[in-house]
Amino acid sequence: QVQFVESGGGLVQPGGSLRLSCAASGSIVSIYAMGWYRQAPGKQRDLVARKDGGGRTYYADSVKGRFTIFRDNANNRVYLEMNSLKLEDTAVYYCNDVLAGARDENWGQGTRVTVSS
Image (cartoon, rainbow, N blue to C red):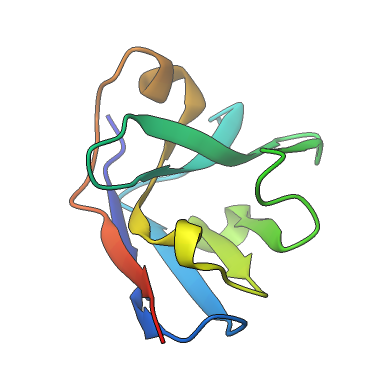
C-alpha cells in the first residue's frame, strides 16, 4: 500500500499563503482520487479537497476559491495551495487515497498549519 508523507505546514498570519506537499512512497497513477483532509483540535477529520485521475476536483465550501489541489502523477506528489488563510484553517492536514480515507485507513503523520496573528 502506498504511504504518504506530508510537509509544508507552519505558522502563518491571517490572509497569508502556504503550499503543502504530499510525497507518495510509490506510484499514484492507479489511485483514482487523491485528497487533502484536515483535523482541527477537538473535531473530526474532514475532506477539504480531492482530485481524481480525470482532473475532476471537489472542494469543501469552506475552502472553495482559496485552496487549490494539484496532482503530479509523474513525480508521485500531491500539493495543496492555500491562499487567504483564515484562523479557522488551523488544523493538521493529511493527504490520502480517498478510498483509504473513507475507510479511515493509511494515514500519515500530517503537517500542522497554524493561522494566527
